[in-house]
Length: 596
Image (cartoon, rainbow, N blue to C red; front, side, top):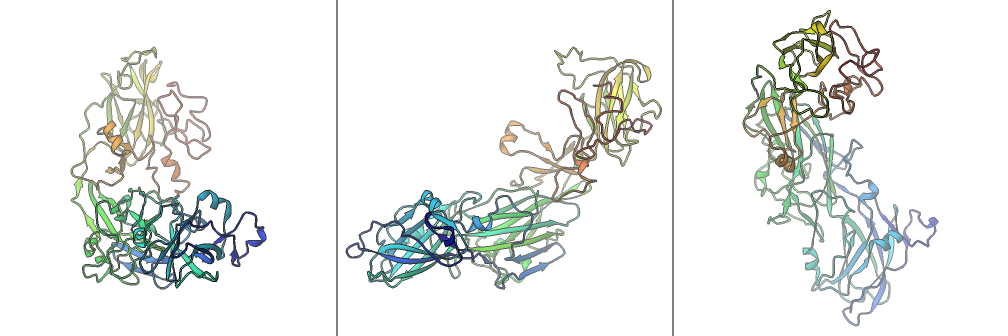
């Protein structure tokens, strides 16, 4: 059990054992009491409750398996890759301030004013430990039943007129709870005796539940686009946990909210959410029937969205998994405070017989017809087995080169392959001379099917690659195709602004980016990379360099090649397939190419 130890700074470290420790009284309240306002010291034994599992059998789990989806519901909290916002056990039960208020049980009226220790005082006088706390506390004398509320980490929220007013107070939370955990204990006593012999016992319970998703994708040709927690209660209430069958909080404007969507860049996601209790309105016979329409529509659920791509056909797929104490009842949709809800989810397919899975209308990615002559540029993306034809009489994109001493127009006599990082990558380069076809100022570069990589070709002032280099171009051979047309809405609006591209994705940075850069997207990989740099697990030593892309020197438009590791460069090859670089130098053996 995680518990608290409250002690004064003057106490020695020897007092921090696991036995109950008594400390000096908290400051007096200033109430007038039920009679004369007399106050008396009582002993409050306080602890922090352990987080309860969502299941009823300890760490046992309930697993449901189908051909499309495996889901295990449990209270387990394994040590795995974690969200950076997950609280440690000490943070989860840390107390930095206390707010204590007394009510008459009969009419609910406040009796005296609240006792509050602010964060500064508590920082100086509270030390976390694993033992129960004995707190001498001054309360107002009363010979009738009393209700004592002890709240932790709430700060001073004022003086409620009665218990109902306190219970109606809601602490609104943002789209992710990152502060010290709000906790509460409600204690009933038959009286507060003037004989100074009243002993109270209270256990602080967290007003939030912990939700942990462990996600695996084993669905062939499926890309997870986003993970999102939805229908989260907008705040936590200063009241004891609700019991029975009830919808709480009641549905109203802004009563629930969706947390921001997150890209699938890790396997574990952690959230802290207020309680959200929803009654069941329909029959639920299996896990696949656990859907929002079996509630009032406000049950908290995890949504996982992405797309299934087969060839050029893309089908958006969405999984919606409501939370709840599923082992207790398959029809339970409640998120209760002070509990852990752990879901181990494995995506395997898109069987829409499972009512938690929906698919949208498939769309087709249609490559745009490649123009007979490419738009002038310094770099061209070419598919394996493809061809690019460009005007080699124009430097770069033909823009202003004022201040460089270079004319926009040039008159090349020949074209030549300077280097390639895969043997045979450029298929129409002469194997002896490296010369590439040039006709009427138009250069034609052909690539080999099934090969990806990078190359640099250059325009020369003389025949057969002789004379001076007038300009050079980077050829990026990749099956990643951005030149496409999409029809239909590929992903839901909350998809972290991600869409499918051929053999990859494109991204934006959200609404502001779209306003400033209409119609523009960001690649999912580095320039020159032969595979995406978005990993959901640690890549192998052989795969990692494929995502590095090309290395560049400031002010130099052509790449210097690709790193083979963190300490060595990948080799370059000439048209004959002979290595022209060593594995640990940048540039060809003997120096950089003339195109620098």
